[in-house]
Image (cartoon, rainbow, N blue to C red):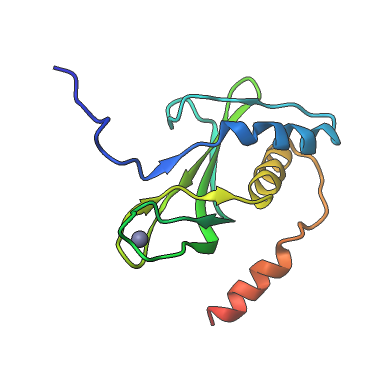
Length: 142
Ligand SMILES: [Zn+2]
């Protein structure tokens, strides 16, 4: 019997619809990547964990939460053979009712994925815009 996993709530998802934003960013450098639609570590050449920003809504109709925004949404970017990549974005739990929620991402998703792909391609880059943010995070966590 095949295992039935469809009823389990997923704790992450991919955002293939944002692939065109990444394509646009990489076009400036003359590089192209395809989106690898299979959410698996199998066959991945490289992977990298980082954080992006976005907003969550609580979809529990009995919950009074207005949702929340996060600057620390975990994401794993993976590289596959043949210039393919994908990114797994982790969901978060509502602080009020513990329901899990899939975020609405901002531009930081495409920027960070594109940055990582350029880096993996060996393209020299300016220090990214979010370096200040990282500095701020490290100051805040001290
Ligand atoms: Zn909630």
